[in-house]
Length: 484
Ligand code: DUC
Ligand code: ZN
Ligand code: ZN
Image (cartoon, rainbow, N blue to C red; front, side, top):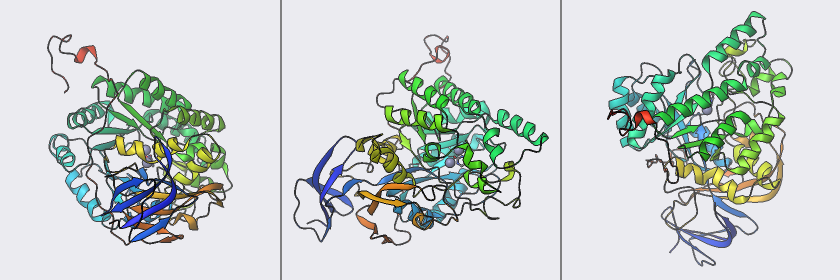
């Protein structure tokens, strides 16, 4: 009766570890039991860990930056790379640039995503919150199950300003969507850029200097205040500072409707990497920038103690050539070098190795950080766990194999990986998406376009008390109606 049975493995969910078999039928998990006989196909997971397939909740795929630079990965190469990294689904961004309608943006990404081998959705980046966008186009996007947005507090062409953010937060809240934010203070960064330029300090390493920790901390604090004013859920992406993480921790304790992630690069790299010879440092430029060892330690402590829902890759693949980093020339000053680095295949192997294999986090935490929490936060209700009725999105890991990271193992369209040469323990050997084996024996088994769009549910705010500003409380504000 089963299409596939995965047997003899150690099954891990965000709450349990147990010896068990999994029966798969029509793309779903039909049974989990001590022993399951039969199956058209039987996969021996002896000596292996059977985990929910990863959900990559932060990736830039087939996306043009505000400066017009296209990522090297499209929905085929990006999803293939993610699959080799132990992921069964992903949620890249669909980016609105100013003047574009959300309907047109989504039509463009729908066409691009036809090539995906993984199930997918999009977070919708809003840079132009016109009345038509807010009250007509966004509600249409919610209706088709796009229940998360990203907004920017930095970059002149993306930054919404505080009023624009309040508008987006309010509309998102009305529809049960979550607003994600890139939190860096734009004016602090621009001021730093001017001071550095006056001294001709334009090498890649000055990118890290130009975006101070305080710029992130100030913006995280402000973003949370804006979200609290209208009691809207907020997700802080790519937290890179100890101070920023501490603010998130404090506000979670207060019951704020707040979620956050950090990324492997903030755990693995430091600003010294931007000081490699020649222009090599450009490979390590991302925003916010990588920091220092003390920050790495602090971020690990926040991972261990629950400040972050997820560790995401922020895969932003700009090649080390004129198509990516160097569209403004091989010696471009840092403000004109595309910032972002690849990492969609390395995210989970890095987190497993540095987290689980080194005893920093439990297997349960690994599963929560890699899949379960993203499924809950972003409304992928069929994914992120191993239980009857869920999609058969599964990754079978060999926890003992050690290998060195190579570019070839990333299976992306990049010409470098910032994790090159790192020794990592733990390899996702077999990956399934909705019951189809997509990676096995180091080979791709998927066919282009087999991934499906996943309509998502509204954000799960269970256990988040929220905040009622006095001035928005009709009982205290003379009856004014300000936000839903
Ligand atoms: N923000 C991201 O989330 N990714 C790449 C660059 C950026 O600014
Ligand atoms: Zn960002
Ligand atoms: Zn990003």
